[in-house]
Image 1: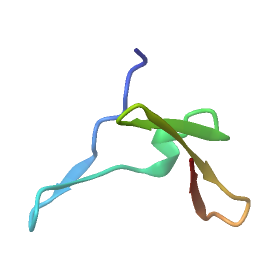
Image 2 (image 1 turned 180 degrees about the vertical axis):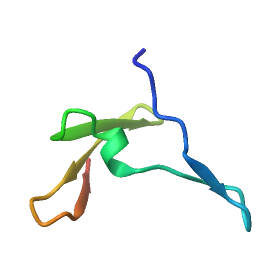
Image 3 (image 1 turned 60 degrees about the vertical axis):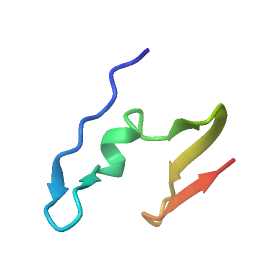
Length: 54
């Protein structure tokens, strides 16, 4: 399994982990995220928006 990013900080109000999307998308193109056996793709558009697709 590849090394996964660690959260940079946690929001003190509700302990929410905070990740920089560019740390998750290490090759600059896309990252695959798996949840309950389903794979999702996270991409950053040219306009700097995030797109998550199944």
